[in-house]
Amino acid sequence: LQGSPWPHAKGGIRNVRGTPAVCLTWHPDKQLLAIAWQDGAVSIWDAAKCHLEEDSKAHRQSICQLLWHPDGKHFMTADVQGKVRHRAQHPRTY
Image 1 (spheres, rainbow, N blue to C red):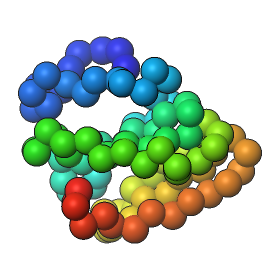
Image 2: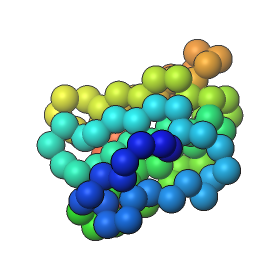
Image 3: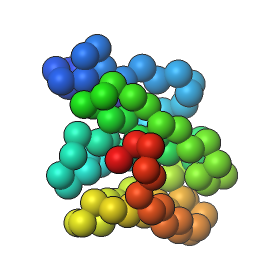
Image 4: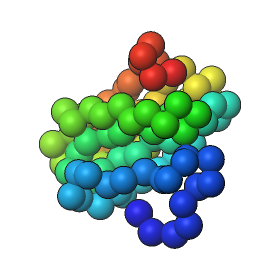
């Protein structure tokens, strides 16, 4: 990720995946940033707790779309092969 670090993230998010981030989207109400990676993984950064939750089995192809539902309880991902996945709220992170 390039650009200025978000000041509330206390040091920013470190890319330890070794692959570029391809999509980012903020939760509609909380300080949660969903990050989709070129290797098909999804991460949720909780900026308030400085905690990163990873899902390395989200997709096998690069993700091209990432969207929170307006209620903030779900989000969708889609990859370049057309596979769409729905994710429900994760109790440890949200």
